[in-house]
Length: 468
Image 1: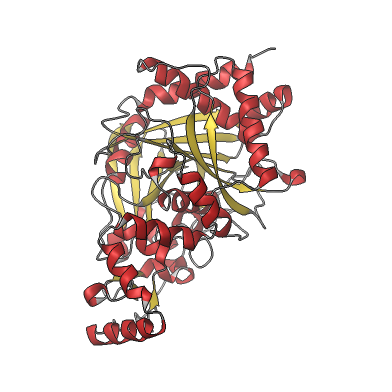
Image 2: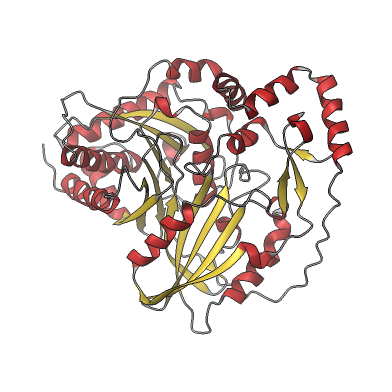
């Protein structure tokens, strides 16, 4: 019997449309080694390792009449060259040109008739650099059976990709009759499943919310939170089909210095820097801020015990993925007080267990940043956009260099998806002494995403120089 999509994975396909493609992205920038890093070598590297991720050679097949959720089937026409594409900037390509390309790529939906991922090998960057831009649908990555493609190809030491003989043989696609028979057999065992599937296809919000909260596992917590809508404002508008992408490059040591001076965790300092930037951005938009004005963030993150809660620790074995609703105090003019408010809010969540529903999403070891960001997107995509204003994922990465083949990765930026009526999503990753922010904004609502990115840098500088 084919592998059927879970209720949560199917929901990501049902709610997707042209304005809210449900894929997670990443931008990795590499130094080109002396002997080159070519599209052909990347094909060899990915091709060698696809055997470890069978989902990347499978596509989604609908069941006739929507009698059951779709199934994963082997793509009998799988073409690696289709998924690993080659692109180039006019030399010498600037970072701005690269990020304009990223925004255009991320605004396009993945082809539902093929395996739900793409990778772009981008040449022409100034400084003899190349970039790898990845897109993976949220229904693909679950962190256990399937990790994100960016995690698959990165190693702690340089590796030489070797030409490979692809011995993979796809299994025959099930017939319409077999799909119907399987669906009927499941319906006999679970008669309510048919009704739920039809209602989900029809975008019944109540049905979808019920399926999602059941899948995540903490119904009471989720429903309690949904009662209280997030504050309204320019971050919650009708999502358009266009995107803008901006980045921030900072140093991990700066966040550690702020933590040492004012307490909290490095995670708290990251959120405080974003809060200060959002405050200035809202003021630039003419928003009327009072002392109690907040922006509610959904913050999926890895949680460790108190003795190992260091943001930069590379080992993530045994981590638990939790998603927190945090009211960012954008109305507070004092940077240190903003940091303290956030620290208290995060501590309250950890102490009281009032996290929103992601505790049941996954508890697994061995996360890489790309996979953890994908899981954070799953948490956001499964919740109503009415309960939060902005998604902020915050993933620790290794503090040693990583390599794709012989090419050393020098920077990595997450690209988080926007859900319906959300204008901004921020991904943060630490890597090799740096902390890298990727800001994905709606092209109409947050056309000034580069301005917001600069405000994050200014906010961090404010925290570094803050005194009581």
